[in-house]
Length: 631
Image (cartoon, rainbow, N blue to C red):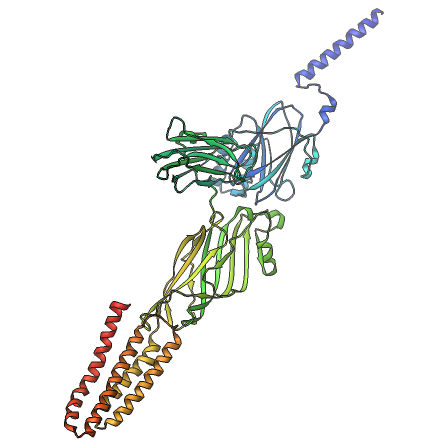
């Protein structure tokens, strides 16, 4: 090789060395070309509660890497928001900066919504709210320098929401921006176990268990991948030492915790590697002695290890899956008839129920609405939505025959709040009628509503303030008072009893029955001033027929009772007195026919005052005896 060729080789080597040194200073690292362009896609699913933030770590990213992100709602009304920050930035830092920026904007009288969104975006290297389809979040982020980054996923700052989500995370995979991509099996983002929740959830229960009554079971709220369950059970009284059992939706035992060294404390910890529903925590007695029992304090928490010490703070977010509370109120427009003989009554009214079911929540961007109405023929879509979504179907427990429904419908808000209304006519049984004080009686009318699903699903909460009677009920015989309500549990079924008390309007009975009876008695008494005993016999006999007619009139309105009513006692007294007067007049006429006129007149002078006084005294005595003893 010539000297010139050697010099050329040396010069080229120096140039290459200088170029490599410069590239090294700029952070360039040569990589395999095929690996550099290979798309990587990770699909993450989970559930976001309202106000919850999930933080993922994206580690060891190189400058120039392009991240593609897409977050969409799978269920609920979730409006996702995603943001990229440096890996050392905490949720507390972000929340503090957003709060400070929002306070400053409000002090300047700026639009709070715009100020909130702008202050939120300012805390991230890149962020997205509605850049995808509808309310979906879509983001392309070019890594500026080597290092670790954090991906934060939550509901939009401007739109409180919740629900299940799908998060697509990719490198060199621009197809993610369409919202659809196939997973390549790569693990790009890893959930940050320690900080992915804005707040832990802790709930406390005090209860008792015994070998005689059996176990206590508590169904847990749905748990997300990465959640950790912590349980602390402390025996506060009793000699029973139970087991603490965690079971899945099928009843399979997942974990069993026992107290050691006969200590009164049991703890349990379990991490969830996937989204889980229907898990149940059971306090199980292990003693065969029927008299063994224990009272305990149960502290259940998610993502709060402080629970294991028994000192964790109770939070508003529940851990136990409580049944859905259904608020019920009834508007009675008309009582179209009270059939005392059949002991039933018919009402025309409107039943209203409202409840909150997260499974009913929906995306507003899909329908372009905040409410969905299920009316008329569309109501079938409300009662049969699929996906294990139920509704608090009900029946009137004291219903007689079929209920006639004029209209019914439901309005569902995007957050899962449901308002149900039904206009109906129904005949209800009234076995609680008591006619002992008839016609001065007060009756009780019940509307008993019973849910078909058990209390693990729904419970009734009466709204007595909105339960009301119409101004024109159409039933003039009764004067109704304000209703009262009570809720009972019958074999695990929630039952609502609306109680309407009503006083009978006695005007009809006073002027149609009682006053005519008094007048008949007075007319009969007036005939005593006549000396014709035969006429008196005719009048007394006619009165007996009148009282028989009264008796049939009253008995036609009432069932064949096994007891006497107050009006029965009055009619009985009139029968007895009138019959005695009839017998007396026959006796006086017989004395006259046998030439004992003087004796008949002496008796008649006594009877003319004894008759009214005796009648009213006997009637009063019977009434007092009836009210004091029989009624």
